[in-house]
Length: 371
Ligand code: T4K
Image 1 (cartoon, rainbow, N blue to C red):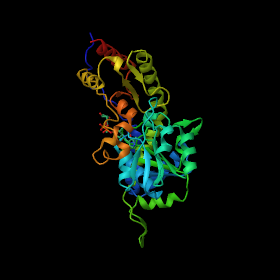
Image 2 (cartoon, protein in one colour; image 1 turned 90 degrees about the vertical axis):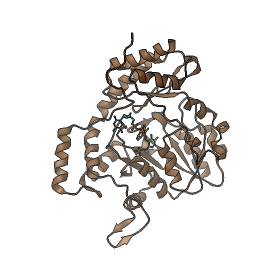
Image 3 (cartoon, rainbow, N blue to C red; image 1 turned 90 degrees about the horizontal axis):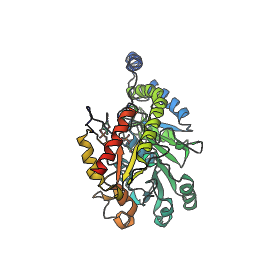
């Protein structure tokens, strides 16, 4: 008889810094009294992350959404941007706040990433960029996307919110395209509670991004452009400096959890593992027809066992009221995305999750199939 968990099991739990070490860093901040506006901790984190992510150029922000929004702003794009409907709303919101029109491209069944074979047919004289997401840590076809971008002289931006520290064939993930955004939200494998970063090819953007995230203020005499406040403060940076020390251990634990899930679930009829190889951020499956029950049903049933899964990324961004009338948002043009978004289920995935608990979650999923 399978019993419910004693305590709720959430889809993720944050990696928290060692309190004593954090306290030491906080004392330093208290002594120096510089608590934001590019203080020493911010600069130290920027420097360390630059090395860690093998970036030529990096800028830190108060969160990933504003990083992406300002990154796009700094590239001075106009017209249309080809992107995926299958992502967190932030990806699309960054376009909307830049007055850019998204052109939705369907996703691939295997990775749930933008289908590179379908990009070219969506390009018009108004297209200025491709905004792709390495969804759930599955890698986009970066070579093909770059080939298309070069052919049509488009910018390429990657939303790397799920791929902190990843490499494709030995090359750091942030070094593909013109720009890459990382999220350091509490739910991410590396977090600063809230935070984000941009990595970019053009070193001239560093100054511009500094202005954009500080209301355009050059100095006490001069305001150069209409920016906003998107600075990462000293406490966020202190947290980041401590959490970074824990990332590798956390990833090792997550790899073991991923293996355990795969071992237990990959041969269950009607269950497809979406995040097989790379992701240390999410573990995602699809509940397909052959499982015999719907994704929504199992999502609800699991709650009775105190297992709180998520339907990331339901609803599709193309179904938002302000986009649904676009030609590219029509369901017939996004058949795969519509199919997958009703099947995906993100399972609990974080280092503190016991292997025994992973086994039990899998047992429940198998039991529910036969119920
Ligand atoms: N692009 C992509 C592709 C993204 O996925 C995201 C963010 C972004 C851009 C934007 O980056 P940020 O601006 O956020 O830096 C969460 C996160 O808020 C969001 O960062 C993330 N993607 C998204 C996929 O997930 P929710 O609404 O699902 O979060 P929430 O509060 O329901 O948390 C999920 C679970 O995590 C909770 O059930 C329990 C656990 N949790 C959460 C928080 C916040 C904790 O244990 N402690 C916590 O403090 O969006």
